Length: 323
Ligand code: C5P
Picture 1 (tube, rainbow, N blue to C red):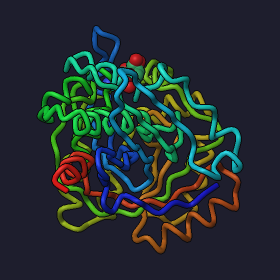
Picture 2 (cartoon, protein in one colour):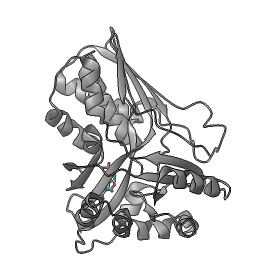
Picture 3 (cartoon, rainbow, N blue to C red):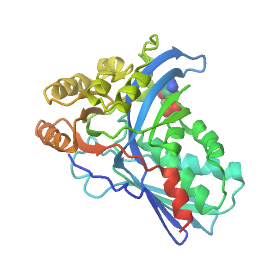
Picture 4 (spheres, rainbow, N blue to C red):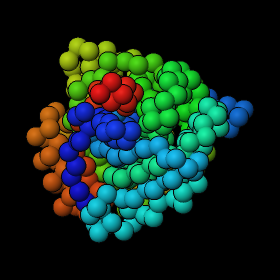
Protein backbone atom coordinates (compact mmCIF):
# COMPACT_ATOMS: atom_id res chain seq x y z
CA UNK A 1 0.00 0.00 0.00
CA UNK A 2 1.29 3.43 -0.76
CA UNK A 3 0.20 6.94 -1.38
CA UNK A 4 1.87 8.94 -4.06
CA UNK A 5 1.79 12.59 -4.90
CA UNK A 6 2.96 13.65 -8.29
CA UNK A 7 6.46 14.59 -9.21
CA UNK A 8 5.12 15.48 -12.62
CA UNK A 9 4.85 19.22 -12.03
CA UNK A 10 7.71 19.96 -14.45
CA UNK A 11 7.38 16.58 -16.24
CA UNK A 12 11.04 16.68 -17.29
CA UNK A 13 14.52 18.09 -16.80
CA UNK A 14 17.77 18.02 -18.73
CA UNK A 15 21.24 18.30 -17.23
CA UNK A 16 24.02 18.34 -19.82
CA UNK A 17 23.15 15.45 -22.12
CA UNK A 18 21.06 13.67 -19.53
CA UNK A 19 17.27 13.94 -19.77
CA UNK A 20 14.81 13.01 -17.02
CA UNK A 21 11.11 12.51 -17.79
CA UNK A 22 8.22 11.43 -15.58
CA UNK A 23 5.93 9.22 -17.68
CA UNK A 24 2.42 9.30 -16.18
CA UNK A 25 -0.14 6.55 -15.79
CA UNK A 26 -3.53 6.85 -17.53
CA UNK A 27 -7.09 5.95 -16.70
CA UNK A 28 -9.90 5.28 -19.18
CA UNK A 29 -13.02 7.24 -18.29
CA UNK A 30 -14.89 5.66 -21.19
CA UNK A 31 -14.01 2.62 -23.27
CA UNK A 32 -16.37 1.36 -25.94
CA UNK A 33 -15.66 -1.78 -27.92
CA UNK A 34 -17.10 -1.11 -31.37
CA UNK A 35 -16.03 -4.12 -33.46
CA UNK A 36 -13.70 -7.06 -33.70
CA UNK A 37 -11.14 -6.54 -36.48
CA UNK A 38 -9.71 -9.12 -38.88
CA UNK A 39 -6.19 -8.44 -37.49
CA UNK A 40 -7.25 -9.72 -34.03
CA UNK A 41 -7.51 -6.24 -32.49
CA UNK A 42 -10.72 -4.41 -31.58
CA UNK A 43 -11.99 -1.13 -32.92
CA UNK A 44 -12.62 1.09 -29.94
CA UNK A 45 -13.26 4.59 -28.68
CA UNK A 46 -11.83 5.59 -25.34
CA UNK A 47 -11.38 8.79 -23.36
CA UNK A 48 -8.00 8.60 -21.64
CA UNK A 49 -6.59 10.95 -19.02
CA UNK A 50 -2.98 11.13 -17.87
CA UNK A 51 -2.78 11.05 -14.08
CA UNK A 52 -0.14 11.97 -11.55
CA UNK A 53 1.01 8.46 -10.59
CA UNK A 54 4.24 8.29 -12.58
CA UNK A 55 7.47 6.47 -13.33
CA UNK A 56 10.81 8.25 -13.79
CA UNK A 57 12.95 7.71 -16.88
CA UNK A 58 16.53 8.97 -17.04
CA UNK A 59 18.20 8.89 -20.44
CA UNK A 60 21.74 9.70 -21.58
CA UNK A 61 23.69 8.88 -24.73
CA UNK A 62 26.71 6.58 -24.54
CA UNK A 63 29.78 6.33 -26.74
CA UNK A 64 29.40 2.60 -27.33
CA UNK A 65 26.72 1.36 -29.70
CA UNK A 66 24.68 -0.49 -27.08
CA UNK A 67 21.28 -0.06 -25.47
CA UNK A 68 21.58 -0.17 -21.70
CA UNK A 69 18.15 -0.45 -20.12
CA UNK A 70 17.55 -0.94 -16.44
CA UNK A 71 14.13 -1.03 -14.77
CA UNK A 72 13.54 -1.25 -11.07
CA UNK A 73 10.71 -0.58 -8.67
CA UNK A 74 11.03 2.62 -6.67
CA UNK A 75 12.67 2.17 -3.30
CA UNK A 76 10.30 0.88 -0.67
CA UNK A 77 7.64 -0.63 -2.97
CA UNK A 78 9.03 -4.18 -2.97
CA UNK A 79 8.79 -4.30 0.78
CA UNK A 80 5.06 -3.49 0.68
CA UNK A 81 3.30 -6.18 -1.33
CA UNK A 82 5.15 -8.95 -3.10
CA UNK A 83 2.15 -9.91 -5.24
CA UNK A 84 1.96 -6.49 -6.85
CA UNK A 85 5.59 -5.45 -7.28
CA UNK A 86 6.62 -8.50 -9.31
CA UNK A 87 10.04 -8.93 -10.96
CA UNK A 88 10.32 -6.72 -14.04
CA UNK A 89 10.83 -8.19 -17.54
CA UNK A 90 14.37 -8.99 -18.71
CA UNK A 91 15.95 -6.22 -20.74
CA UNK A 92 15.05 -7.07 -24.34
CA UNK A 93 11.56 -8.20 -23.36
CA UNK A 94 10.92 -4.71 -22.15
CA UNK A 95 8.89 -2.15 -24.16
CA UNK A 96 11.47 0.57 -23.45
CA UNK A 97 14.19 -1.56 -24.98
CA UNK A 98 11.96 -2.35 -27.99
CA UNK A 99 11.19 1.37 -28.44
CA UNK A 100 14.87 2.32 -28.43
CA UNK A 101 15.80 -0.50 -30.78
CA UNK A 102 13.09 0.41 -33.28
CA UNK A 103 13.97 4.09 -33.22
CA UNK A 104 17.67 3.39 -33.53
CA UNK A 105 17.17 1.20 -36.59
CA UNK A 106 14.62 3.53 -38.21
CA UNK A 107 16.86 6.59 -37.70
CA UNK A 108 20.14 4.83 -38.49
CA UNK A 109 21.68 5.84 -35.16
CA UNK A 110 25.08 4.35 -34.30
CA UNK A 111 25.40 5.79 -30.79
CA UNK A 112 24.14 3.90 -27.77
CA UNK A 113 21.98 5.10 -24.92
CA UNK A 114 21.57 4.37 -21.23
CA UNK A 115 18.02 4.40 -19.85
CA UNK A 116 17.13 3.91 -16.21
CA UNK A 117 13.46 3.49 -15.35
CA UNK A 118 12.28 3.84 -11.78
CA UNK A 119 8.85 2.29 -11.68
CA UNK A 120 5.89 3.20 -9.49
CA UNK A 121 3.02 2.45 -11.90
CA UNK A 122 1.83 -1.10 -11.18
CA UNK A 123 1.99 -3.65 -14.03
CA UNK A 124 -1.00 -5.59 -15.49
CA UNK A 125 -3.10 -2.79 -14.12
CA UNK A 126 -4.75 -1.08 -17.13
CA UNK A 127 -2.80 2.04 -16.22
CA UNK A 128 -0.51 2.06 -19.27
CA UNK A 129 2.78 2.02 -17.34
CA UNK A 130 4.83 0.12 -19.93
CA UNK A 131 3.33 2.19 -22.77
CA UNK A 132 4.08 5.46 -20.97
CA UNK A 133 7.69 4.40 -20.40
CA UNK A 134 8.05 3.42 -24.07
CA UNK A 135 6.68 6.80 -25.22
CA UNK A 136 9.04 8.60 -22.83
CA UNK A 137 11.96 6.53 -24.17
CA UNK A 138 11.10 7.60 -27.73
CA UNK A 139 10.91 11.27 -26.76
CA UNK A 140 14.06 11.12 -24.64
CA UNK A 141 16.13 9.25 -27.26
CA UNK A 142 14.86 11.66 -29.94
CA UNK A 143 16.28 14.46 -27.79
CA UNK A 144 19.60 12.98 -26.63
CA UNK A 145 20.40 11.52 -30.08
CA UNK A 146 19.41 14.92 -31.54
CA UNK A 147 17.21 13.34 -34.19
CA UNK A 148 14.69 16.22 -34.29
CA UNK A 149 11.97 13.86 -35.50
CA UNK A 150 8.52 15.49 -35.47
CA UNK A 151 5.93 13.96 -33.19
CA UNK A 152 3.98 12.49 -36.15
CA UNK A 153 7.01 10.42 -37.13
CA UNK A 154 7.60 9.22 -33.57
CA UNK A 155 3.90 8.34 -33.40
CA UNK A 156 4.35 5.84 -36.26
CA UNK A 157 7.02 4.00 -34.25
CA UNK A 158 4.86 4.31 -31.13
CA UNK A 159 1.86 2.67 -32.84
CA UNK A 160 4.00 -0.35 -33.79
CA UNK A 161 4.96 -0.81 -30.14
CA UNK A 162 1.45 -0.92 -28.68
CA UNK A 163 -2.03 0.55 -29.01
CA UNK A 164 -1.65 2.91 -26.00
CA UNK A 165 1.85 4.21 -26.74
CA UNK A 166 0.83 7.06 -29.13
CA UNK A 167 -1.47 8.53 -26.44
CA UNK A 168 1.48 9.11 -24.14
CA UNK A 169 3.37 11.09 -26.79
CA UNK A 170 0.59 13.69 -26.66
CA UNK A 171 -0.68 12.92 -23.16
CA UNK A 172 -3.01 15.15 -21.17
CA UNK A 173 -6.45 14.00 -22.29
CA UNK A 174 -7.49 12.46 -25.57
CA UNK A 175 -10.22 10.50 -27.26
CA UNK A 176 -8.41 7.54 -28.83
CA UNK A 177 -9.91 5.57 -31.70
CA UNK A 178 -8.99 2.81 -34.14
CA UNK A 179 -7.19 0.26 -32.00
CA UNK A 180 -6.23 3.18 -29.75
CA UNK A 181 -3.55 4.80 -31.90
CA UNK A 182 -5.70 7.56 -33.50
CA UNK A 183 -5.50 10.45 -31.07
CA UNK A 184 -7.82 13.43 -30.76
CA UNK A 185 -6.45 15.69 -28.05
CA UNK A 186 -9.20 17.21 -25.89
CA UNK A 187 -9.24 19.65 -23.01
CA UNK A 188 -8.28 17.78 -19.85
CA UNK A 189 -10.88 17.98 -17.06
CA UNK A 190 -9.43 18.52 -13.58
CA UNK A 191 -10.22 15.50 -11.42
CA UNK A 192 -9.03 13.85 -8.24
CA UNK A 193 -9.05 10.08 -8.15
CA UNK A 194 -8.39 7.10 -5.97
CA UNK A 195 -6.86 4.15 -7.83
CA UNK A 196 -6.56 0.63 -6.44
CA UNK A 197 -4.44 -2.11 -7.99
CA UNK A 198 -5.60 -5.39 -6.41
CA UNK A 199 -3.07 -8.10 -5.53
CA UNK A 200 -3.43 -9.85 -8.90
CA UNK A 201 -3.18 -8.34 -12.38
CA UNK A 202 -5.03 -9.12 -15.60
CA UNK A 203 -3.71 -10.01 -19.05
CA UNK A 204 -4.86 -7.55 -21.74
CA UNK A 205 -5.27 -10.17 -24.52
CA UNK A 206 -7.24 -12.45 -22.15
CA UNK A 207 -9.70 -9.67 -21.30
CA UNK A 208 -10.13 -8.51 -24.92
CA UNK A 209 -10.71 -12.12 -25.98
CA UNK A 210 -13.86 -12.26 -23.83
CA UNK A 211 -15.31 -8.85 -24.72
CA UNK A 212 -18.43 -8.31 -26.82
CA UNK A 213 -18.64 -5.37 -29.23
CA UNK A 214 -21.66 -3.15 -28.60
CA UNK A 215 -23.32 -0.29 -30.47
CA UNK A 216 -21.79 3.15 -29.82
CA UNK A 217 -23.06 5.11 -26.80
CA UNK A 218 -21.08 8.34 -27.40
CA UNK A 219 -20.03 8.21 -23.78
CA UNK A 220 -16.84 10.20 -24.47
CA UNK A 221 -18.59 13.16 -26.08
CA UNK A 222 -21.36 13.14 -23.42
CA UNK A 223 -18.75 13.15 -20.68
CA UNK A 224 -16.64 15.90 -22.25
CA UNK A 225 -19.75 18.07 -22.62
CA UNK A 226 -20.61 17.53 -18.94
CA UNK A 227 -17.05 18.32 -17.82
CA UNK A 228 -17.04 21.48 -19.99
CA UNK A 229 -20.25 22.61 -18.20
CA UNK A 230 -18.54 21.98 -14.86
CA UNK A 231 -21.01 19.20 -14.04
CA UNK A 232 -18.68 16.49 -12.67
CA UNK A 233 -21.59 14.48 -11.22
CA UNK A 234 -23.20 14.16 -14.68
CA UNK A 235 -19.79 13.37 -16.20
CA UNK A 236 -19.33 10.57 -13.68
CA UNK A 237 -22.68 9.08 -14.74
CA UNK A 238 -21.21 8.62 -18.23
CA UNK A 239 -18.34 6.44 -16.93
CA UNK A 240 -18.31 3.28 -19.03
CA UNK A 241 -15.85 0.47 -19.68
CA UNK A 242 -16.81 -2.31 -22.11
CA UNK A 243 -13.97 -4.45 -20.77
CA UNK A 244 -15.19 -4.50 -17.19
CA UNK A 245 -17.70 -7.33 -17.58
CA UNK A 246 -15.19 -9.75 -19.17
CA UNK A 247 -12.63 -8.74 -16.54
CA UNK A 248 -15.14 -9.55 -13.77
CA UNK A 249 -15.37 -13.07 -15.20
CA UNK A 250 -11.60 -13.45 -14.97
CA UNK A 251 -10.83 -11.87 -11.61
CA UNK A 252 -12.90 -11.84 -8.41
CA UNK A 253 -11.11 -8.63 -7.44
CA UNK A 254 -13.02 -6.48 -9.90
CA UNK A 255 -16.44 -7.06 -8.33
CA UNK A 256 -14.85 -6.89 -4.87
CA UNK A 257 -13.47 -3.45 -5.72
CA UNK A 258 -16.78 -2.35 -7.26
CA UNK A 259 -18.58 -3.22 -4.04
CA UNK A 260 -15.93 -1.47 -1.95
CA UNK A 261 -16.17 1.72 -4.04
CA UNK A 262 -19.99 1.66 -3.85
CA UNK A 263 -19.72 2.48 -0.16
CA UNK A 264 -17.31 5.43 -0.55
CA UNK A 265 -19.58 8.24 -1.74
CA UNK A 266 -17.27 9.07 -4.65
CA UNK A 267 -18.72 10.60 -7.83
CA UNK A 268 -18.42 7.40 -9.82
CA UNK A 269 -16.14 4.40 -10.22
CA UNK A 270 -15.03 1.74 -12.69
CA UNK A 271 -12.14 -0.40 -13.87
CA UNK A 272 -9.37 1.25 -15.90
CA UNK A 273 -8.54 -0.16 -19.36
CA UNK A 274 -8.29 -3.96 -19.30
CA UNK A 275 -7.75 -3.93 -15.53
CA UNK A 276 -7.06 -4.98 -12.96
CA UNK A 277 -6.92 -1.45 -11.48
CA UNK A 278 -10.15 0.16 -10.37
CA UNK A 279 -10.64 3.88 -9.73
CA UNK A 280 -13.10 6.29 -8.18
CA UNK A 281 -13.62 9.86 -9.39
CA UNK A 282 -13.81 12.21 -6.41
CA UNK A 283 -15.28 15.64 -5.75
CA UNK A 284 -11.93 16.96 -4.53
CA UNK A 285 -8.53 15.80 -3.32
CA UNK A 286 -9.63 15.88 0.34
CA UNK A 287 -12.34 13.32 -0.40
CA UNK A 288 -9.87 11.24 -2.43
CA UNK A 289 -7.46 11.10 0.52
CA UNK A 290 -10.25 10.15 2.93
CA UNK A 291 -11.47 7.36 0.65
CA UNK A 292 -7.88 6.14 0.14
CA UNK A 293 -7.39 5.87 3.91
CA UNK A 294 -10.55 3.81 4.21
CA UNK A 295 -9.70 1.51 1.30
CA UNK A 296 -6.19 0.95 2.68
CA UNK A 297 -7.69 -0.41 5.86
CA UNK A 298 -9.57 -3.00 3.77
CA UNK A 299 -6.45 -4.71 2.34
CA UNK A 300 -7.51 -4.44 -1.29
CA UNK A 301 -4.04 -3.92 -2.75
CA UNK A 302 -2.02 -0.78 -3.61
CA UNK A 303 -4.11 2.36 -3.06
CA UNK A 304 -3.03 5.56 -4.84
CA UNK A 305 -4.36 9.11 -4.74
CA UNK A 306 -3.97 10.87 -8.08
CA UNK A 307 -4.90 13.98 -9.99
CA UNK A 308 -5.20 14.56 -13.71
CA UNK A 309 -2.14 16.18 -15.27
CA UNK A 310 -2.03 18.47 -18.26
CA UNK A 311 1.77 18.76 -18.64
CA UNK A 312 2.74 16.44 -21.48
CA UNK A 313 5.93 14.44 -21.92
CA UNK A 314 6.35 16.01 -25.32
CA UNK A 315 6.31 19.52 -23.86
CA UNK A 316 8.73 18.44 -21.14
CA UNK A 317 11.18 16.93 -23.63
CA UNK A 318 10.98 20.06 -25.80
CA UNK A 319 11.37 22.47 -22.90
CA UNK A 320 14.37 20.59 -21.58
CA UNK A 321 16.12 20.92 -24.93
CA UNK A 322 15.79 24.68 -24.77
CA UNK A 323 17.56 24.92 -21.40
O1 C5P B 1 -1.56 -3.06 -28.67
P1 C5P B 1 -1.21 -3.89 -27.48
O2 C5P B 1 0.07 -4.66 -27.70
O3 C5P B 1 -1.20 -3.15 -26.20
O4 C5P B 1 -2.36 -4.98 -27.35
C1 C5P B 1 -2.26 -6.09 -26.52
C2 C5P B 1 -3.37 -7.05 -26.85
O5 C5P B 1 -4.63 -6.49 -26.48
C3 C5P B 1 -3.50 -7.35 -28.33
O6 C5P B 1 -2.68 -8.42 -28.70
C4 C5P B 1 -4.96 -7.69 -28.46
O7 C5P B 1 -5.19 -9.03 -28.02
C5 C5P B 1 -5.63 -6.78 -27.44
N1 C5P B 1 -6.14 -5.54 -28.03
C6 C5P B 1 -7.27 -5.60 -28.82
N2 C5P B 1 -7.77 -4.42 -29.34
C7 C5P B 1 -7.17 -3.26 -29.12
C8 C5P B 1 -6.03 -3.18 -28.29
C9 C5P B 1 -5.54 -4.35 -27.77
O8 C5P B 1 -7.84 -6.66 -29.03
N3 C5P B 1 -7.69 -2.13 -29.64
